[in-house]
Length: 422
Image 1 (cartoon, rainbow, N blue to C red):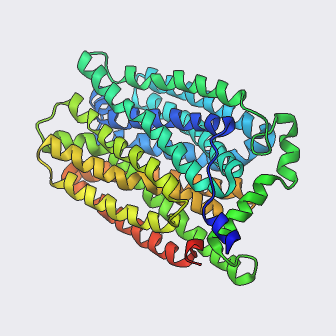
Image 2: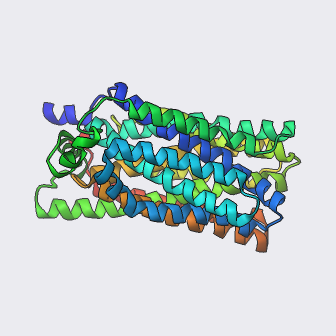
C-alpha cells in the first residue's frame, strides 16, 4: 500500500531544466492568444470573408500535419534540445512573414511556417517534460501550459491596447518574435540530461533505454493498472484512443472560441473592436488560473476524472457567453469557459503519454496530427457557419464539441483505474 501511495502522490520538482522547458509554452501562448483574436481585424484589413480568414486555422492545421512526422525525425537527427531550439527560431521566422504579408496568400504561408515550427517546438518540449518529471508529468505539463497561457493573457490586452492606440494588431503579435529568440537561448543553455541530452548523445539516447522511459512506464502502470498483461495492454490502447479524441475536442473548442469570440462579442454587445478583442483575455485568464489549480490537484485526484469535469464547466461558460448581450456578462462567460478549457488539453496529453510507455515521441506525433486536424476544421467551420447564419448561431458548434469531449473523457475515466482508490 505504501508503494501505491507514493506513486499516487508524486512531487513535482521545478529544477532548472523543468523551468527552461516552460519557455516554449510562453512563446506559443503569446502567439495563439494575440493572433487568434486578431483574425476578424485582419479580415477587415484584407477585405476577405470570415470563412477566408478562418483559413488561417487551416494553414495552422497544415503546419501541424507536416510537423507530426517531422517531429520524431527532428528529435532523432538533432536531439531534443536541437529540435526545440531550431523549431522556436523557425516559428519566429514564420511570425515575421505573417506580419509582413501584404495579402491573404502571404499571411497564410506565414501561418503555415509558424505552425510548423510551433508544433515541433511544443511536441518536443512536452515529451521532454514528461520524460524528465516522470510520475509528476500531469502536473508539469499542466503547469507548463498554465505558464504559457498566463503569458498569453497579456496578448489580447496588448492587441486591444495597440488597436486603440492606432498602432494596429501587428504590434501586439510582434512580441512573439522577441519571446521566441529568448526561449531558444534558454533551452540551448539548459542542463544536459537523458530527457534533454547534448546533440552528440541524442542518437544514443533515442536508441538506448533511458530513465525517461522507465518513469514513463511507471506512470503508465499508475494509469493503466495491470498493463503488464494482454488485457492491460488492450485497456491502455483503448484509454489512449479515448484521450486522443479528447485532445481533438479540446483543441477544436479552444481554437474555435479564440478565433471567433471577438466577432461574437462585437455582434451581440456594444463593445468596440479594441474592447471586443481584449475580452478574449477573460478566456485566457480562466484557463491560466485553472491550470495552476489542476496541476497540483492532478497529483491527488485522478486526471481522467478532472478531465471529464472540465468539459461540463466549459458548457456552463458557453451558455453564459452565448446568451450575453452585455460585454461584462460576455467576459464572465469567457472566464468560466476558460476554467474548463484550461484543464482539457494538458490533462488529455499527459494521460495519453502515460498510457503509452516508451512511445512518447510517437504518440505525441499522433496528438499533433489530431490537434492539427481539429485546428483546421473547427475555426473554418465556425467561420463558414457565421457567414451563412451569423456568428451567434454558429457558436452552437461549441456545446456539440464540449459534449463529445465530455463523453470520451467520462469513458476514459471508466477505463483507467485510480491508484488513490486502491
